[in-house]
Every structure is written in structure tokens, then in C-alpha cells.
Image 1 (tube, rainbow, N blue to C red):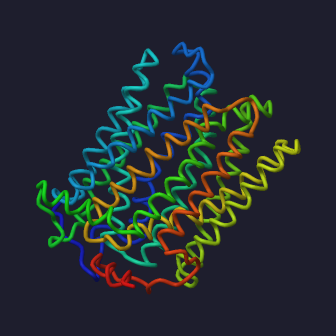
Image 2 (cartoon, rainbow, N blue to C red):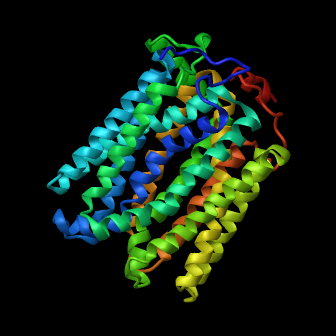
Image 3 (cartoon, rainbow, N blue to C red):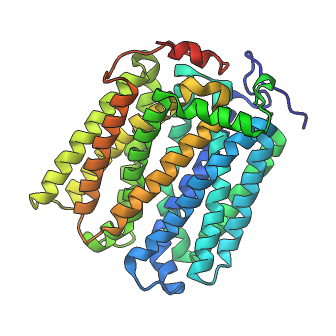
Length: 426
């Protein structure tokens, strides 16, 4: 297929708008599926691979997240130099091969190794998903596209645990990794047949120390980008902490069996609902008004939840309802935080996306590991962790916005990333 650069009239020639949204959503879903489908299988994996400490099974999740986060720092630079398609195809291929390797992993060490490699491959997919969207859209249009993507993408956490549970009911847990392998193969084929090159020719960067230093300097010297990057890190620490601890909380604390996947799905539904709400209101209200209100709601709900636990009022109903409420606020925050972090650095979108992914994922994984390893049979470590992390997220947002919340900042963006700088001037 001959690739062509996007034009203002057709920002992603080769596929229509709906197909583009579904394609990007599927790319982002590879990450969620690789995490959430594992949850019902963790006890079986622990038994088969000889893991004798219950909290250590969380490393199957953490290893993936560390590989996923750490590798993101390199892909943006490569994508800015060589284009989006070749880097995406490399990541998809590594993800697919590592998934197949997990099918045959015979030891815990081997499993952690292929999970790290799977995460390294998924990192390219995640980086390129956001970068390709940023190539084609800007401003509130970008936020709308990302919200639509998140609707499809967030359906995966809803169904993934149930899919994983269904697989382990009728086949060994290794079948989950076979499904991931097949998904990677589908995306490789789709990319080869339908995705054009979206990198603007004038934005292709030379691969040199000077250009790399300049690109990272642009990203990390921007107050708005760094502030929202760190706020994202705190938010991702909350999400990863919940995912890492979910199986133990539902099965050990609340004594649920395989049916915990249904409650997990209900909680995940609230994230999907919030993304649908965000897609409908963000162009009218603006990213800052929506995300700042959601962050305050997230913090207040976390404090309320911690108080309920400390007062001895925690049960399955309170935990599930409050967690669903928090995930609703989380969904309103994340896509907007991501868009606002990317907005002022559109001309180095690959490097910016890499930096954002690296910091928020590695930082979030490490923070969630601290929360997860503190699991003591109750929900207290998780709720206290949420309260602390959301407080720090608010601090970073205040730094990014010079102490102001809810104010409008720029207008709806145009298609080319160079418009981002004009929109962010103060």
C-alpha cells in the first residue's frame, strides 16, 4: 500500500472516521486486555508456576506495566524520525510474539520476562495510537476523538475479566495469551492494509543528539505539559493500584468467587459512561472545567471512602459503589489530562507522547506496587493510597495552571499540530 501524508481535508486517508476511531481504540485496547484478562487467571498462574507468596502474583501485572512504561521513552523519537507505520508494526509484532511466548512459559521467571517484552511491544502501540490521533486532530476536536476512542477502549476492562474467566473455565490459563496473540496478528494485518503514514513531512525530525535533546527539552520545559504529566502519574497510580489489588480484595476480603468479574465489569462500566459523557460535553464546557471538577470529585470521594473504612463501615456494597463513582471521575480526568499535556507540544508529538507514557506508566506502576504490596486483607491501603495520590494530582494541576482552576484556555483546535502553540499562548 502506498502511504500518503494526511491533508486538512482528509486527516487519515485510507479509512473513514468511524473506522479510524475503532482502529485506534483497538490499539489502545491491546494494553487493557493484556492487564485485565489476567485477573481471574492469577491464582492458577501462581499455582502452576510455583509462586508461594500471595502478593507476589501481582508481579505478573507489574512486570508488564514496567516494560510498557519504560519502553515508551524511545518510541516517540523513532516515530518522529522514521514515521508512524514502521514503528507501530514493530511494536505489534513484538507484542504478538511475546504473547505466544507466554503460552509456553514454564517458570515464573520466564513468565515475567515475556510479560516485560509484551509490555515493551504494547508501548509502541500505545504511543502510536495517541500520536496518530495528535497528527490528525488538535484542541477540543482531539479531546472528542480521544473520548470516542475511550468508549470502545474502556469496554475492554468491562468484558476482559469475564473473557479471561470464561477461558479458564474451559481451557488452561495459557489460552488467554493465545487470544492476545491473535489480536496482535489482526492489528498487524489491518495496519498493513489500511493505515496511511500520518506524520506530516515538515515534522519529520532528524535522528541526532541535538534534535533529541531539543525535543525532550521542549516537552520537559513546558509547565502545562509537565504538570498534567505528573497529575496523570498520580491518577494512573490509583488505577493500577485498584487493578493489581482487585482479585485479592474481591476474593480474600469479600469472599467472592469467580463472580467478582461481574462486579469488576460494573465498576469499569462507570469509566465507559464517563467517557461518553465527556465526549458530549467537552467541546461545550472545555477540557479544564470538566477535568478539574472531576479531580475535585475524585479527591473528595477518596477521602469519604477512607473515612468509611476507618469507621468500620466498609462492605462489598460500599466498596463497589464508591469505587464505581471514583472510576467515573477518573474517566472524566484522564482523556482530558492527556489531551492538555499534549496540546502545547504538537510539533514534537511523538516525543511528547513517549515522555507522557513513560512518566505516567512507570511512575503509576511503582506507586501502585507500593499500594498493592501493602494489601493486608482490608481495603484500607487502597483507599488511603487513593486519597494521597489524588491530593498530589490536584497539587500538580494547580502548578500547571498557576493556581487557577476551571478557566477556559484556548479555542477548538484545527487539524495541524502547529496550531497548538497558538492555542496555548498566554
